[in-house]
Image (cartoon, rainbow, N blue to C red; front, side, top):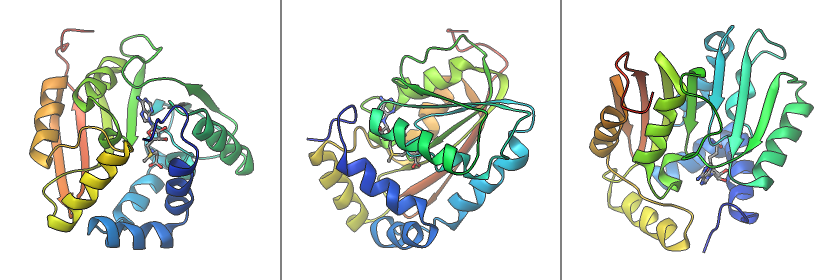
Amino acid sequence: MTDWRRAGLVPVVYDVGVEHERIGTIGGRLLWGANLKRFYRGIEELRTLADGGNVLDVPCGGGIAFRGLPKEGPYRYVALDLSPVMVGRARANAARHGKRDIVFLRGDVTTLPHPAGAFDLCLTYFGLHCFPDPAAALAEMARVLRPGGRLRGTSIVRGGGLRQDAFISLFRMSGAFGTVGTAGDLSSWLSAAGFDDVGVDRDGAVAFFSARRTSAPSGTA
Ligand SMILES: C[S@@+](CC[C@H](N)C(=O)[O-])C[C@H]1O[C@@H](n2cnc3c(N)ncnc32)[C@H](O)[C@@H]1O
């Protein structure tokens, strides 16, 4: 069973693949029937999105999302992951690329160590399907976003095809995946968590999504 706190090989294999766009794109097509070019282009947009803002990247994995970030602020960027191995890889990755203004934290997405409304933007790439309770994770992301703050992410979802659903079952059996919903489930979880302007677009078994933290508190703010 994969325990993300201790896992070494599974996340590292994933991280090496996703780090190299060509391998990631081929893997995305073969495993999930999806075109991941959109994921890589979205990351590049961070150059302007992060400008002057407070950004949370959870789970950061090996640090793929901050690839598009300018080397220095103005921004405050927090990269958080449960796995010490992945936090270490992300830190080394940032150092290699001269990204100095990033704070690295080891933590759990369902108990973020930040006050309500601390962030303007939350990035959550390929993490939700690894969590046992993705709805609770989204509610916690909503809590730490300011009203009007934006959420952007990707997740593996069910309903992309028989082959993809079979892969999801295998990853679930290995413990690498947690609760995997459909694109419809994801929309419902986002709305229930306190997001509006919800957009969920499925390509194969990959959902690309974005949402805005509602101005009205979801009960936790
Ligand atoms: C498939 S990787 C995705 C990482 C990164 N966002 C990317 O796209 O490369 C999933 C990550 O979720 C992390 N993770 C699993 N459960 C977590 C939790 N409860 N809280 C925070 N991170 C978690 C794992 O350690 C792993 O690095």
